[in-house]
Length: 146
Image (cartoon, rainbow, N blue to C red; front, side, top):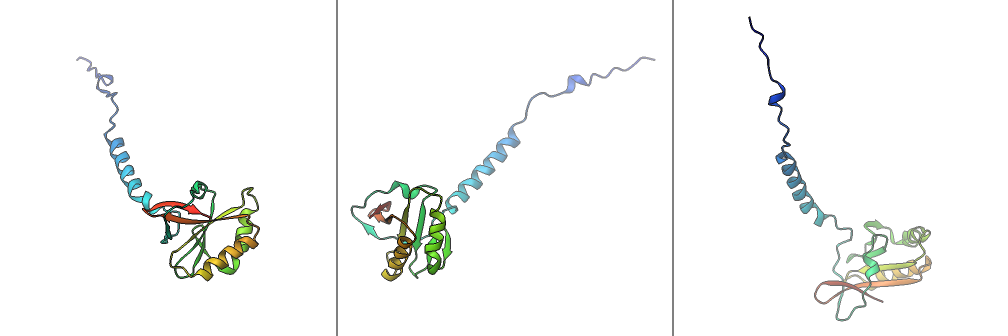
């Protein structure tokens, strides 16, 4: 009787199959491409359009404090809807650790002037030194003016 010798080491495949990894990466890419436009961190409003606005690049920073006033008079601090009577207190709390005391106001073009004026008054009484009024340049480029 002879002894049967099996060569198990000769059957080992040392190549890496990257096809499943590529499939997963393509699915993730498609998911991120679909979700990214939905991650808008601003309240959707139609701002006033002007011909020659003053550029305010600091309004696009992540730590910028933006107050938005909608057409129906709703007041938002960032993305959160707030009670207009609490706006000054909330702004004061946000400004407690910041050295730059600039607030940016985005108001709908059809918002009542009284709501915008009240929001600016509340922000100014909270200790804000500069208020930037954000508008759109004719042609849909975001800009600001004071």
